[in-house]
Image (cartoon, rainbow, N blue to C red; front, side, top):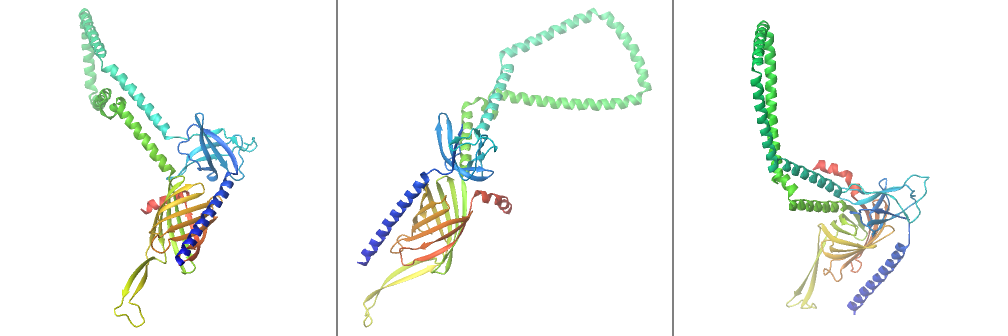
Length: 472
């Protein structure tokens, strides 16, 4: 009879919990369906990296969020919900920006110039700025590669064809004809050359006399000229070596040899490079959306007269899902139950032949949690390891995510019923929460607790990165 009553009581509590959850869902759904805040929209050519519920910032301060993204024609329409008393004017502008190392992509809003006409509720922000995208850089690199390909093709046409060889042969033939003409002119001008040589001889005698008189100065000048000529000779040799290297490189490029040659002529290699670039763009986009939240919570258990401490890390690869890792310092430790049957032969007077003995022991050690969470509307469903045992969880968020109700059900099979814990938390000021709740509601070990919680996100953790790097 007692077991039937306990089962009925658990069933009534489950039905009551479902009714309360449905009522809260209907209440929040009606509130969320009602219009609140200031609604505007803008058009973008490319919204890659933006998701619904991404933040809208003014001067680095969140003032709203993206309510929806949909396609209209060939452009993306982004609907914004501006909260508070912010006023947007006719020359307002909105820009896509990447905000954090591992974080998210959001919209940065400039309200415009006061005095101009005000954008009404449901109006359009005409001033949009796309920002620099990775695709733009890849397009520029592709244009440079096409230009290099055209230059190498022109060099191949100039030096690597039979027509170029014919032109060179014609140039050498013209040079031979010019030398023949010079020989004929020299024969005809022989007598004049003799007279010129006599004059040169006289001039040479005069020059020899002058050199003899100024030999010291001339020797010094000749030494300087020799040094200059030697420098010019070395520079000419280096220039010849450089020209030979350039000729070899351009020849290999024209033949499609080497990395540059293959890159300009091998279409399959170009496709592979573009595929790698697209994969890199996808990976960088995923990192840009990654968000990390660190939490520290301490709770005081009234009946146990002890503190329980949690250290949590939330990793959000995208909106609506996350991974939770926790280390828990539980004052009650790990409880183990051992039952044994004792038989007595012969039994003492007035004692039975056998009886059951139950041994309960506790061991103080850290517990850990590893859970996966999925958010649907205002509810987040969790499953995984909760305090070193399998379990399920349900989180409900209200009042713009400042009020949370956490429900954990775990330790199945260790006692008569699983362990049910209900916790409520409210964010009093930014990052600072007040929590309270009931632990082990169903079983006889019920206890009440209250405490404090701190949460930090990427914006809070970024200033610590230089110090952490220096410490490492």
